[in-house]
Image 1 (cartoon, rainbow, N blue to C red):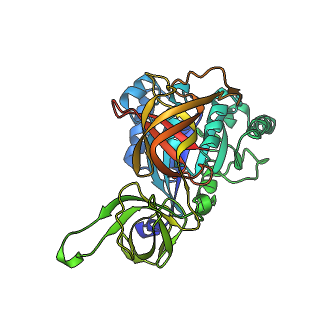
Image 2 (cartoon, rainbow, N blue to C red):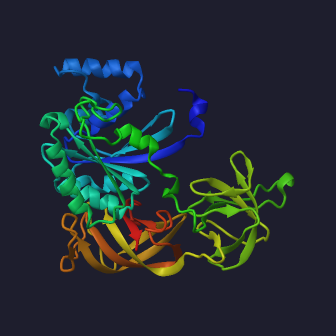
Image 3 (cartoon, helix red, strand yellow):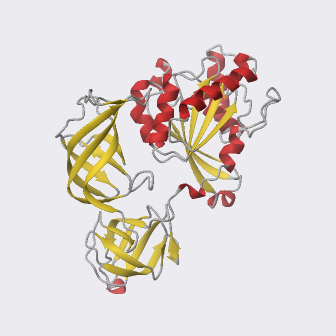
Length: 422
C-alpha cells in the first residue's frame, strides 16, 4: 500500500457496539487481518497465544483485547481507538464495550462517527443492549447504521433466522430517528461476508461489510450550508515581518467560507469581510468542515476564543436558555436540579445552572418518565439549562458540533455529562 495512495483518501470513523460476547473484538480482528492491516509478527504472536490457550484456530479477538488486565478478566474496559487503511479509505474504529454500565463510553466513541456497527448474535436476536445502542446511535444522529447479524455459522446460515432478526430490528427502529440502516449476515470467526463474500449465504445479495465501509457515501455527513467558525485562538506574531498580522485560528464547524465573503462576528454583531484564509500548506480560496484554518478579516476587531464567525444572513441561535437531551456520566452524584456546572461548547467554557429536569427517557421503551427525576449514571434525560452568558447554538440535528455540549464538574474537572441541543 503506497503512502501517496492514502494521503488524500477520505477518513471514515465508525463505532462498534453490541452485547458482551457477541463477537465485536473478533470482528475488528477479522477486518484488520483480512484487509492486511496487521503485521506478520502480530499475527504470529496471537497464533502462539491461541495455541497456548488450547483454542482451535487463531483467536483474532486477541488483536483488540489491548490491556492485560482485561484479558485476564475477559472484559474490554474502555473506548479503544484503532486505525487502519485500505487503498480506498482510512478508518478509525472506536471500539466500545457492550456492558450496560459503559453507555458513556459508547456516547464518547460514537459522537464523531459516520457509521455505527451494531452486532447481534444470530442465536439470541435483538436484546435490550441492541435497543440501547440503536437509541444512542439515533440520539447522536449517526448518519449510517449497519446491523451485523453475527455467528451465522452457528445457526447453519439460516435465512429465516436472519430475516426474523431483521424484521424485529426494523420494527423497533421505526420509532427512532435513523435514516440509513443496512443489514449484513456475517461470521466474524470464519470471515463470512466481512471482507470476503461467503458462498454459504447465496440468499444474500448485498455487499460485504468491508465493501460497504469503503463505499458508503459520507461526504454529505457534514453540514455545508450553515457557516460556523468558532475561534480557538488569536494569532499575533508580534514581529516586524508580520507587524499588523491578526489571524483567527480554529476548525470549521459548518458551511463554507470563501475569500471576500461578508461575515458577522458573534457576540458583537459587527460585520466584516474575509480577507484571507490560510491552511497548513498555504493560502486557500475557501474552507469547509472539518478543516483547521486561520482566517484574516478586513477590519480590526477585538475577537477572542469562544467568539464565532458566521454569515450575516445565517446565524445560530444566540441564547442563555438551552434545552438538551443529556447523557449523564457521573457515577458518584446524580444530575442535580438547580445544580451548577461548567459547560463546554465549541471553543468556549461558561458556567451554567440546571433550570429544570423535564423527564427521564426509558432507554428500552422510549417511554418518557416524568415522575422519576433521579438522573443517575448512564441515564438519558431532557433538561433545560441556563448559562451565565449567551452561547451560539444550532440544534444537534442541524450541526453535530455547534449542537453539542459537555458538562464538567467544577470541583474535580471531570466530564460528567454530554448533551445534544434540541
